[in-house]
Amino acid sequence: PLYWTGAAAPVLMAADLGLAEPPPLRSGSLPFDLGDRAAAIDAFTAIARHCLQQFDCNMQPVLRDRDIEGVHQMRVALRRLRSAFNLFRPVLPAALVAPLIDELRWLNEPLGRKRDLDVFLAETLAPLAARLPDPRGLRHLRTVLEDRRAAAQAALESALRSSRALRLRLGLEAMLLRLPAEIAASGDAALQAAAAMPARRFAARLLEKRARKVKKLGRHHDTLEAEALHRLRIQCKKLRYAVEFFRPLHGRRAVRRFHAALAELQDCLGVLNDAAVGGALMRDVLGPPGGDPAAAAVAGWFIGRQEMQLAHLGEAWDAYSRAKPFWKADLND
Image (cartoon, rainbow, N blue to C red):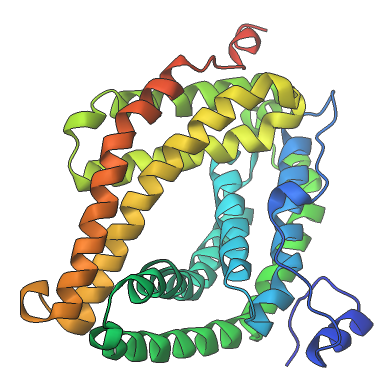
């Protein structure tokens, strides 16, 4: 079957024969620049291509399934791309991009299922088995989840090798090529003005809006229930993606402290979310923790991780609150 890889045929052949093992790649390891005089639409195009490059570079690691990080980085690439579509909604013709967003959601589903199982097996069952004096009670859980992981990998490979994925990847490329002409021909003065806006000014307004959403939820972090903490995590993630997208416009030094504080806050909330997802997986396989020693051990592990992160959440929020927003000077330009 034909599928998009972003790599030359000899490279693919070497990987398939086991002669090369391309490592998973994070977005930060790929070159990225927006240019000092970029307009908003130029910024979107550069950001979208960077996300697609990250997706392409992790295709072989995902298909080879030798490192769980590949699935994570491919999933991050698609999430970043969806976030870029959302951020730049004022400069994008809705009819052109809406079908692509729906298809990105479709492809993200098998990535998410595989990632959840990878995390549970590697970050929960493996350390638990190493610490318990008799890990036999966990073997049934591991066997079931490894079978599910194999099925999830097969489903993911089927999706990535499908004609639907090929249409999506080439459709994204076609959209980026057609975008300037579509905006020019739209006759929409507001859309054209937003697309031509200097990227720094456009970025400042978006960052300010997203930071306010984080502040509105986060100032009550010590009283939030699990669902509200999940919403706070999502808002932090959206702000973090925006910060990383627009960092080249401001320089790394100006952004570093704010980004580091935001990343620490999001990571703390992410561990809480992983514990909630893992707990649901465990209950699905073993039932309530009271009836099974292995289930009780896993439940206790998750409770301990959650308590540690909840204890750290206040410190992480205080550090984020002290970090200076680097975009303020551009709001009134």
